Amino acid sequence: MRPYEVMVIFDAATEPPAIQAVVDRLVETVRANDGTPGHIDRWGRRPLAYEVKHRREGYYVLVELAGDSRTVAELDRMLTLADEVLRHKVIRLPDKVAARAAATARRPRDGRGPDAAQVAAGRRSATGPDAERRGAGVAAEDKTGGADAPGGPAPDADAPSAG
Image (cartoon, rainbow, N blue to C red; front, side):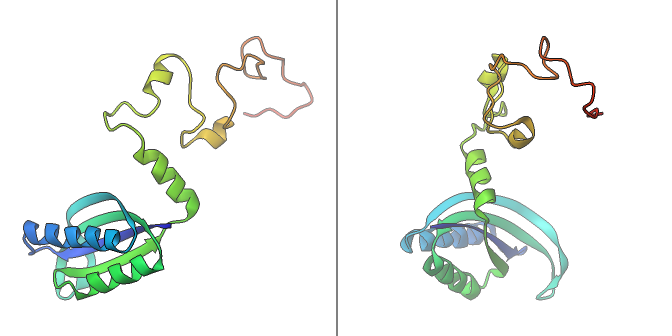
């Protein structure tokens, strides 16, 4: 199954129960076609970039899902037929972005972040968004040191400065 995002723009005049009914149908359509619905993010009422069907404002909902082409085709058909929907767009996420989104989804939502216990203990995780910059896979407990580590080897006099 491949990861997808679906942005749905509803008519702003649509009642919240009607919007919820369409979102519920969307989730059921994904499940009925062997897909896996993910996070549903309700952005709320926002101005449109340009008029769509003589409307200047819409209610935005972003749905993450995993499925195959049959799932997406049925979802597209269902959203095209829904009168409450002004526009919708289905985007297949690149694998790299999907892996990052999956890692973010596993984080606790208490505001402390995924590695709060490790940070409190003085360690950093090698899986954060800046892991490549830090050198992912190198544990903070590694005492071999480096040029910038206290007690580490002195920088080479011939090497260009990093500053």
